[in-house]
Length: 571
Image (cartoon, rainbow, N blue to C red):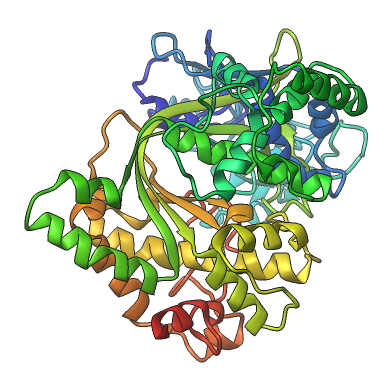
């Protein structure tokens, strides 16, 4: 069949193994026809996927995909071929005669009663392993037929099956059908469009470098130089410019297969010969290995985000005449400081790749479901379906000195820091940022992510109002190790309205003022406050906007006793 759908509609509604309603019938997507490869650095792609599948891997229900990713298996990232589209098939192949209620597996022939009017059944059998089948039907042993009486609800257990010839009851609800995956567990039944039948899972890869760009980043210092740049306050236009550093060479040698000890020795030899630069102390900050890796990954993300185009407040001051220059000089800096921020920048070209990496059946909770990854039908390799878009974004960085003071007031034993860089380093030395699904996080890490995440959600609500963009069309990207968050417009096409740019150029002070001084109570208080301080009425956002499952949120950290925003406003 032929039906017109856009690329975003296909990614978000027509993935392989997903059932869809098309032209009055139910169909199952069998495959994307000749999808187009997307060129993205494999190391970056694998790292993003490992973070996305970790909630299932922690419970041993990721179908082995994390093991393959750690083993450096190639990931095939593709986008829809808009000329070829997707291939669909009728499913389930069970029809009900509208006149006598007999069930048949073909709708193109006359029913025994003489009618040619059929309605496709909407129920499917599914199992958490990923299998999707047609429900089993129990037929009359004498007449070999079955009919159904619909209860007027979507509950499969209330269906009444009987023989249309002798009226004998055959079953109430569909008969038991075990899954053939080896577990012998019963297959569940529901209408095909129910969320428990097919729950797709997405992640977002922002600023994804292509292989050439990734090689350039590594050759010019990689994560070590990026971390140094972030710790020094994003100083300079191009942090990747200049001579290769000893830390960058060391990282490159390790990625090429050398042991860390041998790579360090070769890098030091190159330094002594004058072939590489010493670099500054960013790459040599004494950090735990796992924290260093995460901090460098986030620093690279931040570096690539700004590499395509950035506009700073100082740049607007230098390039504007009155009265805008007066606005930028007199209103923007104090509002930024009152909001507890160290920096706000406009990212004029923000590439976002949305990745569909798998699906679950029987729910979405990683603790109760099995992740089913997509695979190439011919080669069996991991396949990810993607959609690339370029959009606009705003970067917000919390003031690290104020964050450190806020955490000390909340009871954490942290030293004083004389400047922003020292504060960033002190936090990195001790913090362990939890994963979105982690249930027993480190106290300090939980406090940091709760502060940043709560800040992001409240900020999105106020930016949506001032930008004219629907709240669900704004998304967050958190870089918690660097106290940074990026709010971007979730463009699903080639057109970007420019609402965030308009806010940055004319109304940033108004957005931050409403963020700080606006209503802090929830309409559902005191119940919301007693239940954790975050709900749909105050801080929660829709799933496309929040990658953290609306966890680690609390208005108290912003506006309660010793609240971060309250204290910043007071100061």
